[in-house]
Length: 534
Image (cartoon, rainbow, N blue to C red; front, side, top):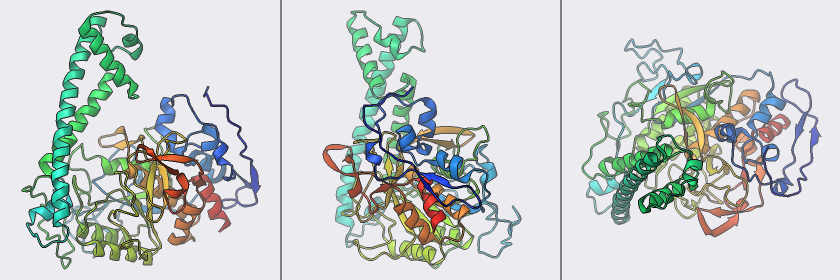
């Protein structure tokens, strides 16, 4: 049984005389009184943790997208059209048990014959294309600027200052994590020996009353770990080790001035060559899991008794491996967008971004191309808690907050699984001009390589949630244009009037409505209702 604070629920149900196809009239929850919803104060169950992005704010008091409600009350057994969603990302495990049946196949291409059967310039692009070739690790864009030693570059001085700050920051973080891991291991050993068991619980730790000084210090440290909402010491140890690995990657590759990551033989500053890479869209190693996680959020096979349910059914995922462990190249992104458009994608998900972009015009041209060809591009806002109206993140569809080149480009910020003042993820970028909507992005459970599943957080997870809703709309209402789908996503969301903490800074509190152009969080249920009326 959930426990709630004592607040009055005044959401009223209204009947709309419209439906999906030949369905009966559907019931809509008006959103004008959503701020009177109760606040959930009990811990999320394991099932809620794994599915919260699909839950309903009114029914579950969790700021999900009402996906389950949309299926049970609107979609039901209706058959929609298949929609191709291109995932421009790291490689995708196309053999994953929860994804293998939803992977796009280019029926015009004969697998592994070394011939460009469909004459699109890409040989054996059976499930998409890999612009990275055999590469994965890469520098950050501002490191490339420094490595060029071109002091005439207007971004050089800014890049140098950022490099010095970043190198010091990640060196310090690596040291701190390593020291904490040592302390954790020592405390774990002492407590395990005292309890005479390795697999102890938080209750076991809380019940320790021994006055031994080393034991008291160890218990205090473990109590601190449990206070961080950790299920176990081993989970926290795993996070520390993953953090150390990420910091090593940052220092050894991303911030390494002499590292050469590009292996495909192509010049990233010359747009005259376009057909490079290969048809292997899978991850280069198990740790290359980002694209697989994103794909699962969009379209993991629903109700197959395995892992997770994706937001959308009737989807085929086109894998476009373009994003390395570092900053993507503008040329690769521009060509990846055009590849997806030319090969039938109706929605493109882009869970990537950077703050320097020497060829941003190439990418904007590609976004305009997608818009011209009726393709919706869903983009993650970024994870630095920045105001995008003051600091540009790339790719974007405008310059200096000026006119947009695309009617079909939508930028998504991230929500936490808790309604109220802390519902905006502390890492999420935002912007009244340059962020469009918010969606579930923190603590999202989805597919990872080799038939595994894991929880990850970021606007990288919020964007595919919205891409999934967009795919639902395009599947069940295929006559709607991409521009109309964007408008539906923005207009049908839940308009929250609550003041929220921004950027994790408790001194920075703003109305939720001021953090994006729409002032809303995406809601699949209301989106399908609005789509049916259009």
